[in-house]
Length: 275
Ligand SMILES: O=C(O)c1cc(=O)[nH]c(=O)n1[C@@H]1O[C@H](COP(=O)(O)O)[C@@H](O)[C@H]1O
Image (cartoon, rainbow, N blue to C red; front, side, top):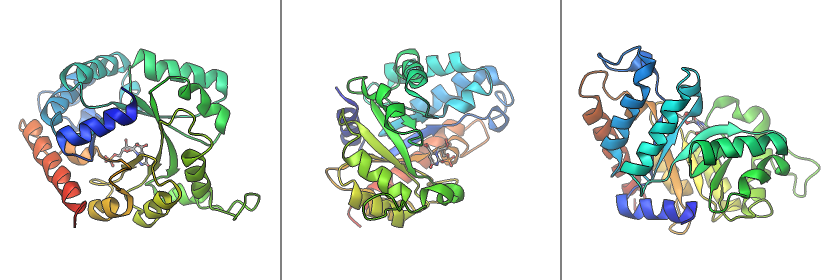
C-alpha cells in the first residue's frame, strides 16, 4: 500500500484528520519520568497507544530524539507504532535538504533505518535534492511550502520575477509539487495552520496534493479555518498537534489527558468538514 492509500485508510478507520506529533521533552515529562531521557520511548509509546484509534498519522520530530542521543529509542518507537497501530502511517519530521548523494543517505535513514512511511523535506536546494526520496516506491514526502512560523515570510513570500506570472516562492513550490516534481504521486506540502489564507491559496494551486498542516494547539492556529481552507473530499489534509496533546497534563494522568485533547481536536476538525 502506498503512503496516500495509508493516509486514506487511517482517515476512514479513525474518522480523523488529526496527526499526533511526538516532540518529547524530558523536562516536561510527568513525575517519575521527568528529566529522564532514557524514558523517551516509554513516554511516547504510551501516547501512541492512547491515540492509536484517533490519528490519521503520527509525526515524530527527529531533533527531539537526536538531541538526547535517543535515536535508538526513535527506531524502537516507530517499530512500536507499526506493531500497535499498523493502520496509522508514520511521518518522520526531519526537514532534510541536501545534494543528491547526501540526500540518498538521508533517504536510507528515514525509510530503511527508521522505517518511516513519509518524511518532511526542505525544497530549498531544488529537485535533485528531493529525487532520491522519490525512488522509494510508495513512500511519501512533504515539502516545506508556507511554514507556520512568522519568519516563514522572509523567503517564502518573496516574488519570483523570473518565473511566469511572478508567483511568490511558496506558490511556486505548490505548483512544482502539484506538477513536474511529483514523479511518484506521493508528494505533499507543509502549510501552517497559522496562515489559513495561504492554505487556501496553496489548495488552489495544488488541488489534489496532501497537505501536512502543523500549528494547531500550542501555536494557536485555527482548526476550523484550516479545514475549511484545505480539506477537500479527494485531497487529504493531515493537521498536526504536538505539545498541546503531549503535555495536556504534567501529572500521572498524562495519557488520559492526551487522549482527551486528541479527541477534542479530532472532533473539532471532523465537525469543520460540514460546518
Ligand atoms: O514540518 C513540520 O512538521 C512543521 C512545519 C511548520 O511549518 N511548523 C511546525 O511547527 N512544524 C513542526 O510541527 C511541530 C509543531 O509542534 P506544536 O506547536 O507543539 O504542535 C514541531 O515539531 C515543528 O517542528
